[in-house]
Image (cartoon, rainbow, N blue to C red; front, top):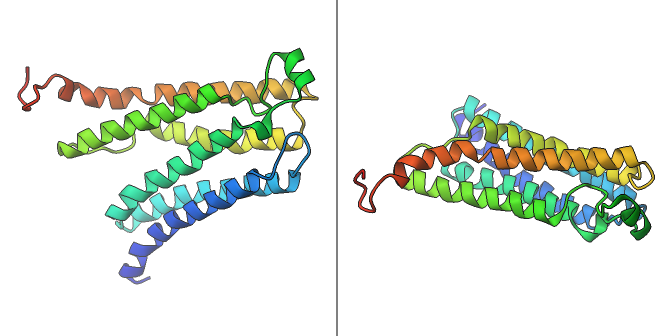
Length: 217
């Protein structure tokens, strides 16, 4: 394969991920728990899985072909955040609320287990890491994904389709054990997301110990 073509394929996959995310959101918006738009909801899950696979594939190809570009460094994390954050916003939305009688009996309100406060936590983590990235790279410090950050992304990419499939197809409101599975998975994902920020906070220690002019205190 020509080298110039190799350089474009990872970027094309990144753009494709954004288009798949748009299709995912459009289809997911047609679902209303518990039974309205089930086919559209399952189609949304398929689009999410396809988008998550492009994330793995474009990074793998870029490294294998030494085709890392500025476009990819900017757009790849951007597309990841659009897909994941958008998914959690929908999972915490009114389309997945439990019926009032079930919510009152279980003391829970979301079939997916995802609540708005979790979305705020996940969003805050991404904003903080993005800010740290900006400071680090402006100082000439390399900023790559850490092990916990990669684990967080893998867990999120697996948790979203599992929670969706359970909520869309298996009526957690009628099967309490499934309701606890979705809530446990949502809590685990949120906890790992919070923990994943720790290595990046460590990167900031040298900057926090420095004076505004850059000299060590």
